[in-house]
Image 1: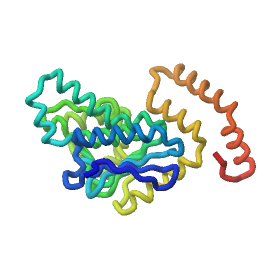
Image 2 (image 1 turned 180 degrees about the vertical axis):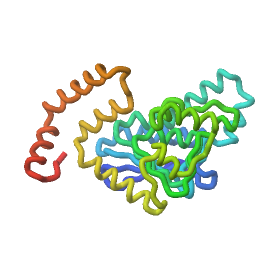
Image 3 (image 1 turned 45 degrees about the vertical axis):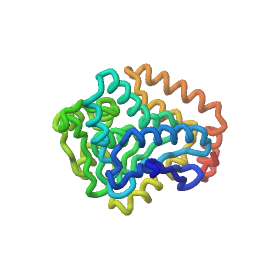
Image 4 (image 1 turned 60 degrees about the vertical axis):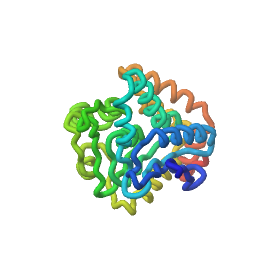
Length: 257
C-alpha cells in the first residue's frame, strides 16, 4: 500500500495525504521514505503554488509508529540519533518547497504528526479533533522540531506547558491558544482549505515566496528584519509582477500572474 498519496485539486494546488488509516496514519520509516521521495518530485513542479497536507480516514496522524519506536531500544545512541535525524528530515523536507503549506487537520493530530502540522504555515482543524504533544507521556523528549515550531506558534509559556504535561486538547481549545486558525466540521475542512489556497493564488507569487522566507526564518533583531524587508521590496519594485499588481488595483480587476 502506498503510504503517501498526492493529487492536484487544480494545476496550482496540490494535496499530500498520509495514507495509513488503519494505524491512524502513524508515521513509520516507510512512510518517511515515501514522503521524502514525493517532496523531491514536487521540487520540479513549477506550476505548484500551494500545498495541502491531510490524513486519510478519521485521523490526521497519531504520531510516530510505536513499533518503530520500540525497536529503537535495541539500538545504540549513535544509531538512534542518525535514524531520528533522517526521519525528521524526511517529513520536514516539506519546508524545502517554497510554497504556502496548509495543514487540513481532519482528525486527531498527535506527537510527530502535530509537529509536521505546526511546520505548516496555516492550520485548520476539524471539530472533535484532538491535538497533543504526548512525547513526555512516553518518557521521550519531543522531536520532529516540536521545541522549534511550537513556541513560535503559541508562545513559549503555552508551548512549555503543552510539552511538559503531554496534554491533549480539543480543537476548540487549540483555537483559543492559536495552535490552529479555525475549526470547522470535518466535512467542510477541505472546502475551507481550498478557499484559503485560492486566496493565496490571488497574491503575487514572488512576494509570497519572499514572505515564506521571512516568516519561516525570523531574524534576531528588528533592524535585520527591516533590512531584509527593504531587500525584498527593492526586488519587487523592479519586477513585472509588482507592475501588474499596481495596474490591476488601479483597473479594479484581478491580477494576471
